[in-house]
Length: 145
Image (spheres, rainbow, N blue to C red):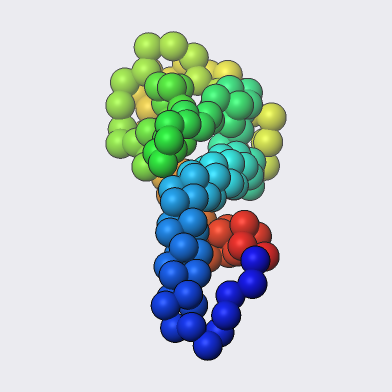
């Protein structure tokens, strides 16, 4: 399509049409970008669990999922102890055996302890979110190259 550059109305109409076309697809592109960001956050949170030695059975790591809706993504887990790993726990009673690992004993041993001394936080979701959240420009750029 050729636009006569000496006709200001034709140039303005062409630019307006291009803007409308780009704006019309913007939500769809943003949804794809959010998918990419959510997938990256999921992967990064799994890596943080592994790197901070929070993986005993792999259940928590494998339970991290992404729920996808248009322009809305939710990354999370349904494992009940996930919050305790992320934020730590205060001392509490335990009515079943607990696998206790130490830096000297990576495999750990099952022990009935009755009273758990609490655990330090081992964040995995928050660091993943922080690594991804401010990189929107990097995620969207490939869609416009």
